[in-house]
Length: 379
Image 1: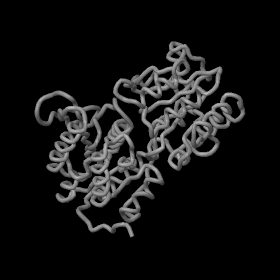
Image 2: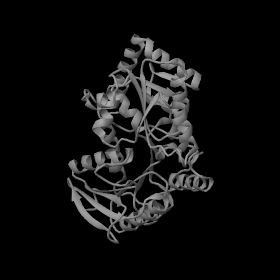
Image 3: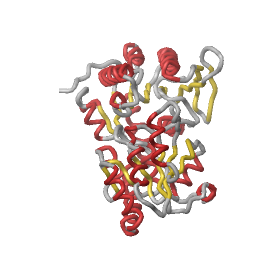
């Protein structure tokens, strides 16, 4: 592969996308860069397979696949193998996430330009044990101080990173999504739902995502609408999951996780509003996808969600405020219609793939040929 316009994407489970936001972005960006004439390699992880790298090609993208068990240990092994492989090849390295930034230091020592998407403030998430939070905190610092350029997906993340690195080494590029103008009704009616007469939440069922307060708010009084909560539940092992199920018993629909994108798209598109309780992180992909579908948004009131969803939406700080906002969504048709209009406008303004991929391409182009430099820390 040529070294002048060569790109390696690390930090995801691979393409085609089948897992989360980083995988979706990796697929989109890899195909975009191939179309622009770049040699693109994406590292992919499978649970089982032969020892060593397995190479193939997918839609013009070179895939390098390593087998590594699931879980934190398997992810670390996979990231280590990817870095060792990438060390032997020239070109720009785009690392998505900083969870194993200590490994990527080897790339910088070997004079590779490294761009790191710093994701959210992972070490603040309550789901991690204390030792996991220490590991993430240290790796955030390592990634911030050693990468050629830091990519923040939200102004608040950029502000946070500026406490570690000079602002000139940080670029803010948000996440993108596709506009959804229509979706079949089948998945909605199959679940016994009425179009426009249900709320939906999509995401991990964790305390920091405020699923329990939203369900408590919905169940606080009788309502002529439904609440659909998509996400994996394990009440036998997770007390929070047990509390969520108890609070929504008989009132909330829990279909579990749904991985079929067409079904999720239909359920989101035909909802009265998308419910987003996330309180930690940057530009959340699911929230951006809701804006792309023209959803009104009921969201936890914090700077992350406020910047993404914008004005005209329904924000809450606690279960009582959430219940009042659900009442508004149910009764105030003009406010609901205006929220949908503003959601679509905000999406067109900030979150379309074309401009976002172009900004990433510019960042990679700027990094071509760079070696290790002396960077200014935050002052």
